[in-house]
Image 1 (cartoon, helix red, strand yellow):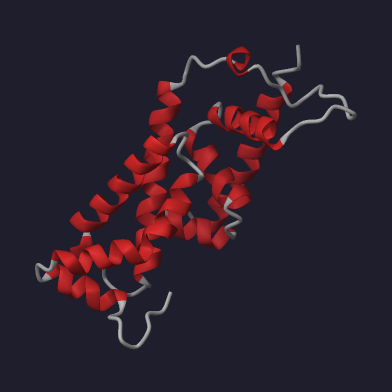
Image 2 (cartoon, rainbow, N blue to C red; image 1 turned 180 degrees about the horizontal axis):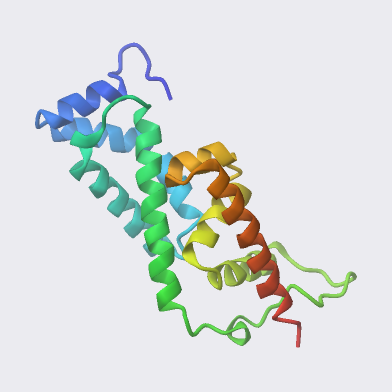
Length: 187
């Protein structure tokens, strides 16, 4: 995102914020808030959780602002912090939801007759359930590749994994997702 000529660049705002101007960091937050919320919205299960994880992302960014080297755009650096915070959220959610059963959601994907109408909310609910059964790294790679439609290279940049590792993780994650869906036939 390029700033108009009369607005300071992200890099300039970082320098000013590091010099002690909190308003400069607030300007960075305003500028990148929608991007961070967009990333986190794919991982959070409620508005409250979304607000919490986004706040955590910006706190981490503020605390680590001195580590921003400027060799890549600020938006990429911030997106990487967001991806890692979302991964942490997934790991925590996985532990918290270890006892969730399919019956509590009362939906299935496999076994649905072709002539049955399945609304978008039911499909989303089932997808959230199935993704919730996966390990955090599997959910992260599927979310970034399939739902966020990031390239393998972008996912590698956000996660710190090699491109080959992203491809392998994605293949394994899709296989696990298929197993979860097949293991839960409709009642």
